[in-house]
Length: 247
Image (cartoon, rainbow, N blue to C red; front, side):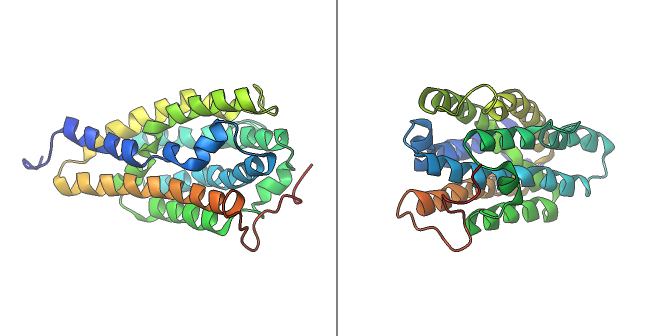
């Protein structure tokens, strides 16, 4: 190991500080959503745009796996695809997200078509898929470590949705309930793998840059939502309008 690289403990603290400073739980849109301040159309816009991100997660993981030569890493990582796509028809995180879409009054087929996704959402998410597909394995794995910070936002979201919105029930918010057990499993492995493989200062810097990039991908999506549907409420051409895609 490079003798000048910070210790494993210092490196982990550096990664966690990125989340403390940059994770999207601090975005005004999430504060609005979790406090009950979003109207029906703003919630729907969030569901539509977040679906695009959810639907691309297994695609980025499949792209990652196509480059992995270590069969043990492939075996462990592929559970992420199963969590989102399910192991049988009608199961998995994507199907649970479409249950949420139906619960807020959206046509699940419309949501799955991604027709109403904001251009900035599409741009940010596609950039993330390309990053994981094209970057070396270490930064590709490190970019997934936003999961370190996800359990808190899921707990806050579950509590906020149940308290403030009529559509929220055990069925419609089941996606978030499942992530409370799925995300810690994924991040325990991912964090350990990054800490084991970031053996030089350059490795640690690359991993930190990758995690920072991922926080920016998440933040950019919420910036786009806020601009289009909260203030100044300027919906760009091609994005969802409140009269579209309803049940």
